Length: 108
Image 1: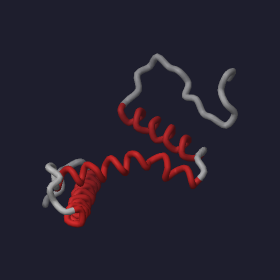
Image 2: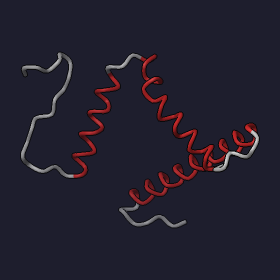
Image 3: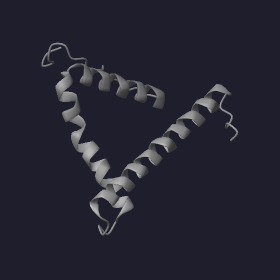
């Protein structure tokens, strides 16, 4: 293909609509291709802004008015982050259980 850099992958254009599963697969392919071209030292830099914004979200969540001492805000923000990670882990576990049981909602 003309105008395409060597080593890149371009999806063929199609007029057929794709399913949501195919759209997810295409997004995963594009993500894997993008990250495969980045050296290891640049990977952390690519996500630094997102990580900083998420941390600021936790700080605002635990102290919206900014009145707590910094050490207390940090401690509460770490706890809020842990709570989110546990919540996401539970959601993933339930989704896996539901998928294993044929789509039926897992008890619990």
